[in-house]
Amino acid sequence: MRKFEGKALVLASHNKGKLEEITELLAPFGITVTSAADHGLDEPEETETTFAGNARIKAHYAAKATGLPALSDDSGISVDGLDGQPGVYTADWAETPDGRDFVMAMTKTWTKLEERNAPFPRTAAFNCTLCLAWPDGHDEVFAGKMPGEVVWPMRGTNGHGYDPIFVPAGFDITFAEMTSEQKNAISHRADAFDKLVKGCFA
Picture 1 (cartoon, rainbow, N blue to C red):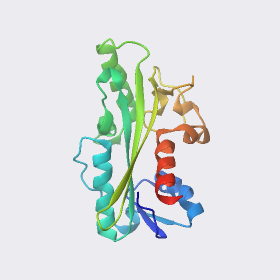
Picture 2 (cartoon, one colour):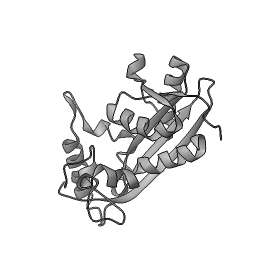
Picture 3 (cartoon, rainbow, N blue to C red):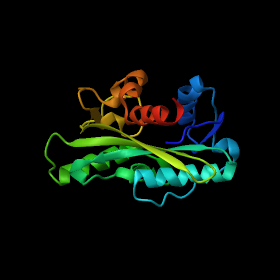
């Protein structure tokens, strides 16, 4: 396991929310985090069929382009009753000509479960894979997971993506009904970050 020795890191993402989250997480280690957008990078095509594969594409692309270590995140929801779909294509299910529509994506997910007459509880898991890549081509990969089930109708107004239909295991409210603090303490991303910090920063 390679330890992170530098003081600067690129987040291989244009997502401002993720940038804030990771900046906060790495602040205790005195690390400055910039985003792919700050470096004028476009987003590479994600051509792999696994979360780890796509995370690696993004991290290595940003590391090579900037000469700095880069951190990427690939995440999505896998629904057991749909043979693990949408999985790595979670965001694709929400794509429209006018941007992403997650209400449409959640409706599609539930409709497909109904069509298959999938048994209850309709188990699922949120997955998050982080890849920390160095300019020399080395990388470390960490996978996080939050099991639970998908429910209908949608509940809650917090969070994003598929949060309104996902109830994490051990809870009776959806991610979208939780405060960000509650969700961030137990989420798939929190699990992956915990492993990343222990592996490369602690």
